[in-house]
Length: 296
Image (cartoon, rainbow, N blue to C red; front, side):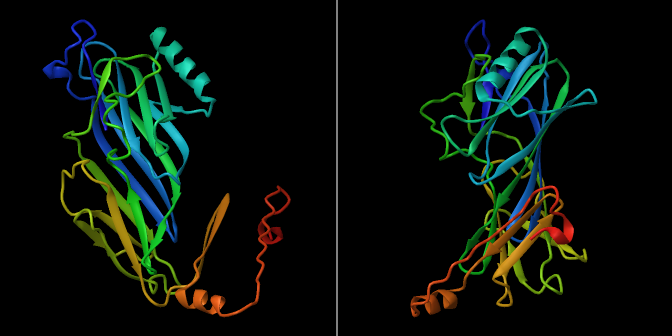
């Protein structure tokens, strides 16, 4: 999951340079129906006496879409701009050569669901907070369970034979899977249905011991039951629905809408026993003039 920094003078890994200075990882998620909004926060700290480049490789669900990437250092927030890959790599490399700080997030060329963060020219004794936000559609399994997955390990997505991760700055480094880093996790599940809870029967995790707070009126809040949970497996949350669930669920946000249509087994069987052909047409007018009641 991480790269370790190599001594350019001796080409030997020293005991003090084993792990990239990733100090903490925090995951905050909000689940609404069949979609999740996830924010991952990673805090890097340079405990060495010279500026370093920290590189962190992490997985994200393949169907996810990243919509925010920010870096905070010395009370300054830097908001990322979307650029063509080669151009972004060149600007990142130029900034490091000039001794400036630079931050780069890019998709791994060898894997569509792995991303690489480069935190370049991190000064000594300084911390940098990287925040990434993405949205993802959730899987519907076994006919009545919504599954939420937060990938935290690269294997088997990453090819261990290559043993390294490329950097635009050509930093000497080595790939490391086993780490002592821990992760904090908090997930909010909005209650659904007319009574706001009638469709959720049970919440469980096959991957980690969890605690579920039922005290809130409009949501369930999930946290890890144990402290110091390590980044050694993916986080799995199963939301089991009751038989009262609806086949159509709509999630509405200020600038987006998502509709999920899930036919039941009975619907499919009835469809196989009829010669009737159905055509469904969906029209979404997103022009500026189509707002509120005009949107159809």
